[in-house]
Image 1 (tube, protein in one colour):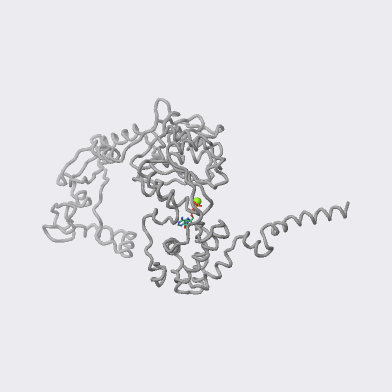
Image 2: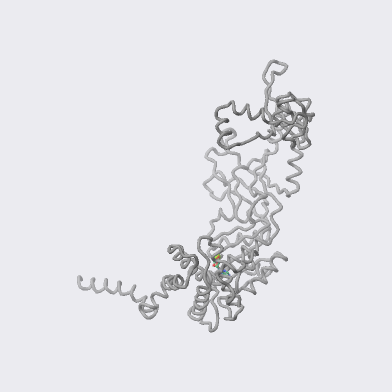
Length: 488
Ligand SMILES: Nc1ncnc2c1ncn2[C@@H]1O[C@H](COP(=O)(O)OP(=O)(O)O)[C@@H](O)[C@H]1O
Ligand SMILES: [Mg+2]
């Protein structure tokens, strides 16, 4: 056993793979691996604190990161019917490049005013020769190309203060310089100079800037599910709008000048945010009738977004076919299984697995080592408590054995109701911190075990059984009765 060879839990290597951190649920882990490869759905059934959420999260960590971004576009013909747009990662990058290239005139740094060339990082402030931005020191005269810029910054008192305080050093070349000039008609005209990645300068005059404005105007896009997102969406006790999305109310009713256009008020639901990832619904039966929507979403892999408050201006807005291709993981307690909609369950079984989680594991040397791993993990995850001595781990293992017998009536077993056991470790850790102890010691865990008992356990100790404890509640009612009688 590893436990015999360590000085403290600091010597235990905690696995970085979140699946390897789940202890004692080997059957579930096997199905998680299948779900990752084959994109299957899962229903995890078991009492609280045996690792359902952990498993769902671990599944998400093993999926490829999202590749698509979902946006809603303005529909000029029918503003209340915004159009959905799905863009792949590669399309997003090539498009933003194209947009940049679409307009303006590209010239060499020699052709722009010298102060512009200097601020963009091409021209040496001292000798006036041109070189690439990558040269901080002028290759011709050897002076710092940006020293003049530092000086001019220092002439401004606020900048000087910042420079002095933060030692910003040479100012970085700018990416863009905005200037103005007097145009042919005598009116002032804005000109923007942008440094391109090829070491040239793009000149955007008034006309080019106007083209860009029109391009953006034509292409009004509201990103509702960004490319950079978590691929794990966790819901418990969701409302309809959280689950399915919404169109926010506009007090000005989309008035062309003062209102907010419909496409900007569209909000994605959890089913859309989970697109390409995992939708994890804890306490699934609590969703009640909303389970029907999940069923439809799973079938169609797309679901419209519409305003869900009939009183609101959003109710007249609808976006069709918003993608929601997620892996579904539901979780619930054993007693609640019967409250899950049968068609939803058959949908899961038809393309996935229902898994009953374990509540105990056999008391073997290997499994004792896994409890050791668990203690080390809990300490590492918490981050605020010290490591534990081997005696502490032994006490936790003994407690795991007592609980397997007491709670689940399992002989020679170790409990897997590990959330509660984690609480014991944390409380012992807090006691160690209060004492400035280097490690969690036996005395800490001893006290923590005494104090972390559940109410049921305390009732049993004080009144002999949970039942006689319950009588305490009832006797209050009886007292009332006799009082009433004596007055009546
Ligand atoms: N099988 C397990 N292996 C390791 N740690 C566990 C396990 N089950 C529970 N835990 C610990 O308890 C915490 C809560 O577990 P969780 O996955 O939320 O349980 P559930 O979702 O079944 O209620 C976890 O963050 C972890 O610290
Ligand atoms: Mg949970």
